[in-house]
Image 1 (cartoon, rainbow, N blue to C red):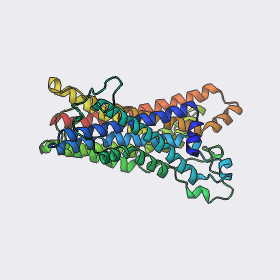
Image 2: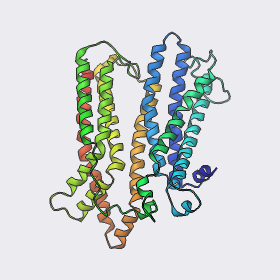
Image 3: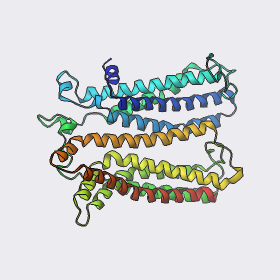
Image 4: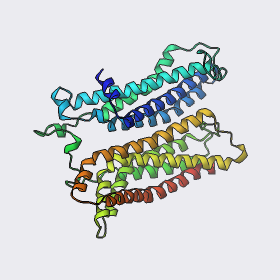
Length: 397
């Protein structure tokens, strides 16, 4: 009940983010239900049905990642001294965040079920009643256990991930008199340690590109078909593509931290110094979403190159494939924007202190623009390079 009251009392922007989580959950749940409909209508094609379900893992991961980012940025679940006095400490608030995430995702899953039943023709009285009757095997009964299992994937995964990420840190709770509040943080008290994921990220990126190239030259037969009906791609190429994306996600925080160090190099002025320190402090918060956005952008570029190389032989992108691609791209971009909003909220008091000390607002806006330009200058060419290298094995097959 308290989680529902906190959700109702949120500001319009917070409510919008929760509605976006529900929409992403609805889209992912609908894709899974469509996979079930395909399996019911094609009992002889069990392998193809499993592959369709496997492709749903990509939008599922993007949806869970977005839900966790929204839970992290929710001001209603931030530790505060007033809530701690009534027994709502960090552990209870992390539980409330997980419940709020589960409620939003359950709402989306329910909407997905209603829309799926409506397209099958099981629910009447609305436009497009039974429009996909043949595609969703309307002549066969739906197994209730399978429907409930598929629809609980997103709520359980998102709420569990939120509870894991937002669990209280014992290092802060051990300090006497310390309240884990954003207002008492001093982000510029001392430099943040550099993230240590760059070697792992570079290793995974290089390994992924090597696996893609080797698998493409091996000519080991067709593997799982790409979404949209495009020709099969070997399992090795897809595994290499996944390793490349994982490497970019691991390297993102360290690359963001290096951007901050580069801005402060060679006798920096006030604007460059402020921009560099902020990037170093926000490296962990926005670096990983940046890396994931680069991975998605490079994958989209490679897929577009593959479609262009196929020419007239390339089939049209189906509606379910378009929905999945929209979910992945939309969730990754929304996660990055949510992380940026969270970072801005975390330094609100620092910005206010700088303004009270007489710092011009134009200088602060210039520092923000400089941060965005530095990140674009690094991650833009990196994304293009990785996309080109990832597309070469796909075209060479």
